[in-house]
Amino acid sequence: MNRLALGTVQFGLNYGVANRDGQVTRPVAKSMLGLARENGVDTLDTAIAYGDSEACLGEVGTEGFKVVSKLPGVPGSCADIQGWVREQVDLSLARLGLKTLHGVLLHRPEQLLSTEGTELFRALLGLKDAGLVKKIGISIYEPGQLKVLTEKFDFDLVQAPLNLVDRRLQTTGWLQALKDKDIEVHTRSAFLQGLLLMKQGDVPERFSQWSDVWLAWHQWLLAHGISAVRACLAYPLSLPGVDRLVVGADSVNQLQQILREAQCECPADWPDVQREDEDLINPARWASV
Image (cartoon, rainbow, N blue to C red; front, side, top):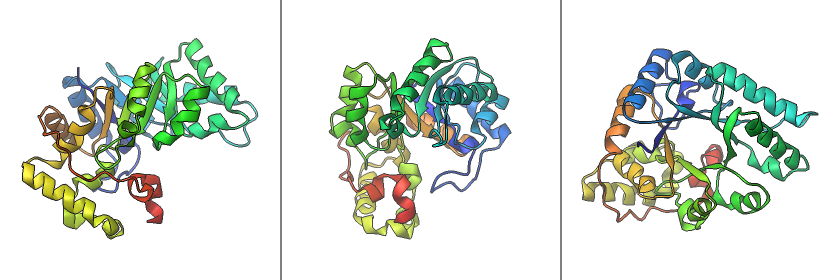
């Protein structure tokens, strides 16, 4: 079984700090799904907020894949949360050409802690009861969100960032804690949105304050004689608690490289590049860097 999941934000948006090819075209998307399928990838990750990613997937065909999508934040003016959630998922299924989703995640899980949180969670449970989704859960930005959320609600699936720079999911013990609760774990951002794949001289100027990270990273790669792609994939895949590693690609060639490198061995003496600076490890903060 291949533990990679194909992220499809590039199918609907021009996404990623290192993306030079723009949004993936329909023919390329179809070829990428075919390649993923042939190599044992069984999961696709998308979201309503990813432009026309869901429509693209519906057009090129999702046969043989489990699809996970995400709900955007519930509008503040929403008077019928259960009706809104059901409508959003019905529309997603229609765009995707599916009858059931493997998972539905909340893109704004903090809304579960609002006064409408109980109603929102009840709406998610209603999706399972109706057979529209198999698993419900949350997509988080950092593990600190998990304590209060997992104490109040029972999730089937959690997606979180995890990479060589941001190892908090592992180092805080939350990866093991989620597995102890029998929660399926998907991790993303293995390449830190492409920063870890850039040549040292190509890293945007606004990230120069972390030049020690890029220096240590490239020295380690050179010393070990391995590619950045291989090392980035090997770290999360070395952790048995990670059920699926969500990776995105801008082209068939990129996906071929990822699939190839994911099968390769990698030394486990990981480089000293771990940081907890939110301005670096949380891409949502990059605009202010």
